[in-house]
Image (tube, rainbow, N blue to C red):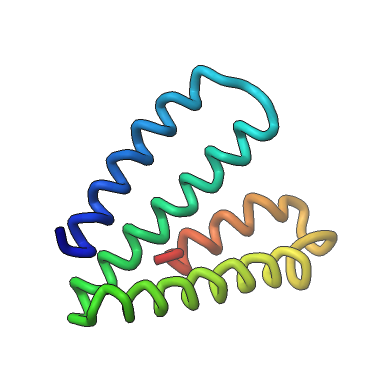
Amino acid sequence: MTIEEAIHQELSEMDEFLRGLQELDGARVQGLAGLAIYAKAFYKGALQRSKEEGMAIGEAMEQEMKHMREFFFKVDQRYYSELKGRVPEPIKELVGWIGKYGGK
């Protein structure tokens, strides 16, 4: 099994895991669901990066992790440094900015 095949299998298992978690409740369950969603985004981004940029999956995973950290930092910085307390609807503005930025 290739790394890419293993990732696709993992993504499928995460979907099953998330469906199962929908039947449960609680803060810890929400945390697990959040981690699974984050992991799915990471794996999908790495697969896409590998395909589009023609790089090995290991390198794509490293690049995707770096990109995600930078993106989360930019979102946080945008909200706290530029929007919160400065505009009437900071969350709405932030979501609009994320849509324009792409979050890819």
